[in-house]
Image 1: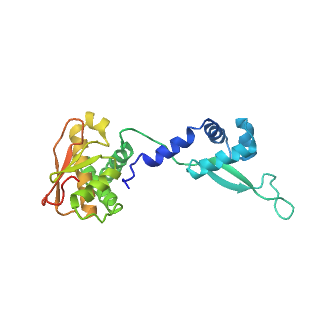
Image 2: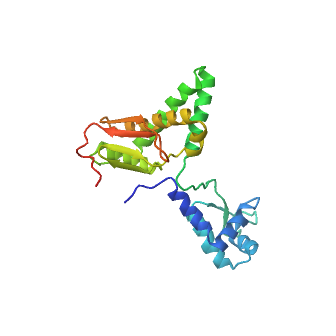
Image 3: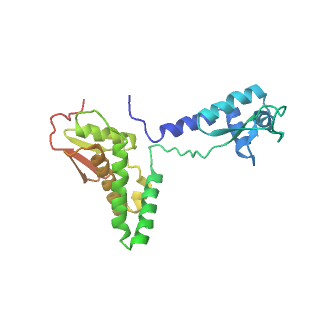
Length: 236
């Protein structure tokens, strides 16, 4: 099974909203000041209650809506009736880009670096490099693999990060830069952070036999990796 890309989860959410009635119900719930019942949502969207229930629960399954239970009468105790199932918009954010981009990751790295540099007085660029490597290390540790080839192990993790890796002749090329737009404007900074991040992923995976370096190619990522032993890393 191919690795899940950063877009996969959000694509499922976008697909859920592609159905017109479902999108209308979502808008009704999102536009309300408080959580609404299925009856209220159905009335607002102009659909039958049983239709609203089906679509609202699908939106809950996709993480776009959340559920709470509350008695609408305000009464408690015996005879007050069962709590109503109410819907409200969740905190989930959707961002889909093709090819995959991770501008939120870059923003997080830079925000952490500025905060840490402000507190310590260290140069922001130095702190940002450390933060990028730490982020990469954590990502690598969250994507363990039983693949024997270290280069392919790194490729698998970077595929999950949207890098579109390709392995051939002991070399790992990355066809996509998740920070592409910013890299066009701040090339030295972003490419440096990208290298630190990818090398952090390598460390997190325990790929000691792989070396990373900057090797910019048109239309791809500026980072590449090579294995010290190319025998087991032939492209299948």
